[in-house]
Length: 115
Image 1: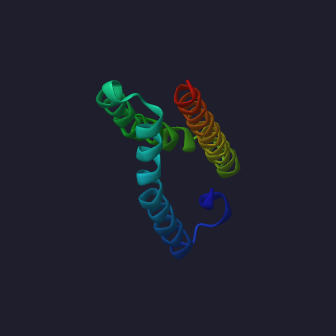
Image 2 (image 1 turned 45 degrees about the vertical axis):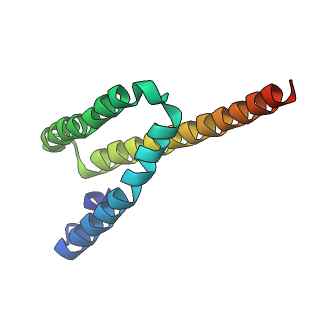
């Protein structure tokens, strides 16, 4: 989205640094969420499939570079903004699923402890 606002090299470098820091902060959170949501016996399969998202991201990035040659900066900015919003909504749904799963486990633990 920064490219739609500025072509200044320092702004782009600052945005790249900010993006890198965000990635560094988000990876442990994503892996913890995945480990919490997946059954222990299937965790390696899910982790392997999850690792493919980096490859998919590289593919999408390459496609966006090509599309960016034909689509104006504002259009690309909207595309990236939409992708970011989709990621935020996905994280929110994962966090809700995690909370529901934790509540279900607590309820099952209370029920099995009561009998």
